[in-house]
Amino acid sequence: MAILKFRVYFEEDDSIYRDVAVKHTQTFLQLHQVILRAYEFDSKHQATFYRSNDNWQRGREISLEKYDKAYKVEPLLMDATPIGSEIRDPNQKFIYVYDFVKNWSFLVELINVSKEESGKLDYPAVVKSEGIPPSQYGTKGLVGDKLTEIEEKYDLTKGTEGFNVKEEDGTDAAAEEEETESEEESEEPTTDE
Image 1 (cartoon, rainbow, N blue to C red):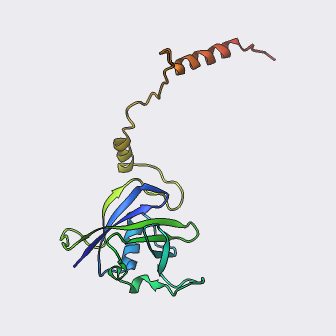
Image 2: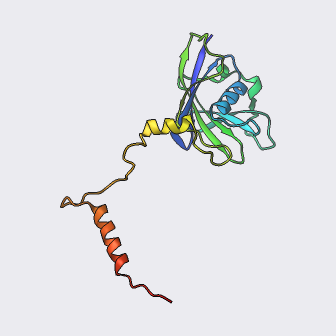
């Protein structure tokens, strides 16, 4: 049985992505569910996939359900469409849109096809996570492992004093600016009322 590995990019920032593995016989409904799980979104909203090309143009729609809107071509339904039936080339792309009000968009790209099924995984599965996902309902705090992940990735513990810019003559521009500001503050007359 073929295992399809997709990279699911957050459209607004391609450094944020999740790799998911699915069996080619599984449906787009299962792909939809694993993407939501990977990005920590709930499943309360409308969703659709579009078959796409290398230029990320939207093609045939594979929808969660038939929505009350005009369609050029009748959409396929996620629960009745096996993923393997929509793979047209080795780098097949899909656009996934979730929550038509917020319009969360993800770029889904086939990155690997394997004949070997892993006994350790329960398909569909999230196999790699990179970057902190956007928060579905506003901001969420960085706590625990995620903060540690950022500190390790960007090494936030070093250089906490800030950055200094050296002038051409080798003097410290930030230090000179601070001295000038403190001199100006001491020169201002104080008035007592």
